[in-house]
Image 1 (cartoon, rainbow, N blue to C red):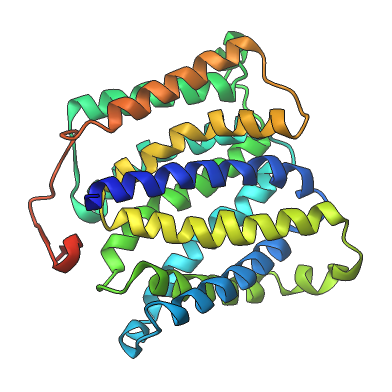
Image 2: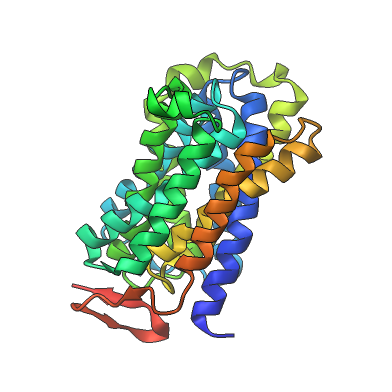
Length: 311
């Protein structure tokens, strides 16, 4: 299997795992402080990834060079997760997932600014189709709400989290110096955990961890192991093999996965008109996955193992 195919497969799994965090996250968002649960999930994920790194590639001393890189990446991703849980306090899971599908547009912009990755007209069209589908879902298929630009506060909060995520994606490639994905992920998680603990220490201490409802622990373990640890590795693995916009193109599948999660959890399906927007996001994904959608950055060259080295 080619490195590009491996990247696509990893992101397909990523989109399914991340979708679960929207449905489960909405069930626990009002039962624990976002800063506390995010710090805990980073801690658990760091332990899982640390053990995985120790058993596979090891933790070479060279990975500790320029530790500020991990603080930058950890800060960006921690901000994303905190804002996500704040947003899920009021935003429905499918609507929040639709906001997440705006990330490829922002990721393409960040990819150009940071890596000079060029977006072709056809790719811009695909991003526009996906954005239109996302907006249709966000405004719940209501033309009057769209014209009046009536958007919920939860969606607005989460949007800013998605901005952090969009910057994070190309920043991985910008800051990676050849470290394996699992090692780079471990450093990012540790840095994010430290930053979150310092920032949300009061909420962390105030949380009655011993008496939290079972659903909170189920959600915490899921988002820690699958939606954080696994997705960290999958995104970093894919980002070193695919352009940033193509990596984030898989977010267009998230609303579809969330709908399946909601049905499985007994929360019902959205109204039929909203599915029109979901279909548009799937069309955008197919358009984005065309092999020649993205021209290589003129100043980039490939290093060992197919990793791109930018200067």
